Amino acid sequence: MESRLPRFTRDGPPDGAPATPRGQDCAYYSTRLMSGDGYRLCFADGRLVSKSVVGDGD
Image (cartoon, rainbow, N blue to C red; front, side):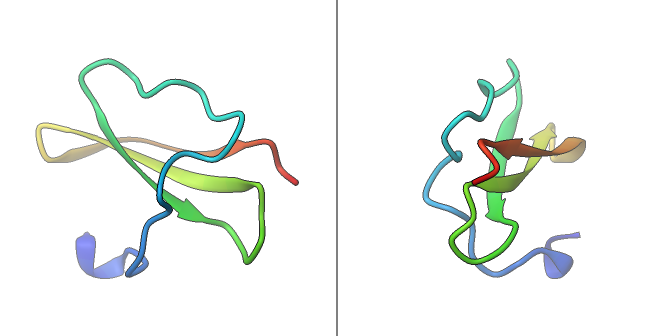
């Protein structure tokens, strides 16, 4: 799956993103240039367990 992900992640979660779910590692990707939201992909034990759009949407 990693080969299909964008090359670069955001430096951290966008403003307004909920806390990382317990036991999961999440990566954040921008939805578009200068956007206030982002895609969040969360993994547990090397498997994708959730995906969502998070942030303030500006």
